[in-house]
Length: 614
Image (cartoon, rainbow, N blue to C red):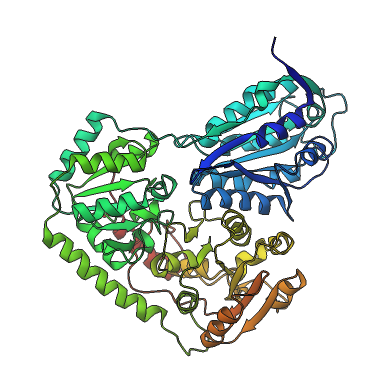
């Protein structure tokens, strides 16, 4: 009979997580970077006591909001290329539900995070307990059932021994390249405190290394044959390139076979900006170089991308009637989208195998020359858009240019609003992972918490968070966490007095300026928010600047400050980079009293004619 140890369920969870390891650069390290925790009714007695006992092996970090800590945990995994990840524990009720948005963004972006919300009493004797959501038609329901549609794996632990198969299954999902995503183990609060005789073997050190599935020979042969017939092929690089640690492999593949590469939001930095085959961003926020090639392409090698609508221009970007997609992806669901020729494999080994099958073949020089000419023209447009300006209010592009000039090797972090489009076009990433964008779910409020997660994953990186005033107002409290943890961020806050991006979209679809910019809202008095003072009140070094020149000076002067710094600059909400870009399918009302809407509807119907079906 094997040896056992008597532990509470919560103690077993903590001890198990501390024993999980991985190998990075030849060094065995904990696979969990730590546990974010906000204690309350439902986890303070059980998980709180358990985490204290393992605090030297599994550090516990206190955050200011549950959504903030879960966003930071997801960012940690993304910055770690999914090789390491974090866990989060919360109380029941509102504490748990505050993590739902983060679970959804992890689900959409295929990123691992372990969520451990407290739950109601399994024995039901004290029901209804504080913060319990009652369903009078189903006694098994709790608020945590809301995690089900946004979790790759969900389990509710109602007996202490159930944690044994649940944690093993959780680790399989968190480390599986195809299934990877959020795992939610809903921990009934009475069961957290119940003891069980767990086998010692359950807590043995286990090392998890990336699985790299090889391509099927038939799929490989079909993909190679399609490429050999191509005259105008392109590569779209997605986040899977980074998660497979295949950046060098992609660079070698593009160089050997002379194929232009364009990057999604998640895939940007898969190639260094300086690589001659890097055409920049693609799609709705794409460069003119990428989009011109994509329109003519006869074969698209979609590498590690889920082909969302911003990448495909709502499936109106590809205009070659005979074009084909080869979907190189570890997830079959993504590999076969829109009738693609699937090539289900790890990106790195898939590219290596495909390159071997294409030995001696490369694209005709004329196609590559067109790509290089387009790239040269695009770089001129970028330089013009980002050049220092003396306008009363600078644009987002002007601010991006200032950051690029002063902190060229920074890891830039951003999420929602107008900045992602401008950064996708204009930021020149220096190395893999130096561009960190949450645009799969476009989560406002991710930026600062995400920057904290990036800094925890990459302590030596110069992390620059770019955030608009609207997103800052939604979630800024992790500034205090960054101060507390000594995780220095540089936050550049662009204040355009409202939701500038959506205001522009409202105007483009014929709508009146309404409820987006602060001046266009129902108000008695417009708020005069002193963002620099607000950040300083949380312990940050802060200042407000009045021009691009002052911004550059501030970025240089604060580079060596040892704590989080917030630099605020007022910006113009209207201008965007005119070069590049593509139509995006945003439905316009079919009838309206406003002639501007009716005109926009006519343009919308005309644009739909280019949209591919199937």
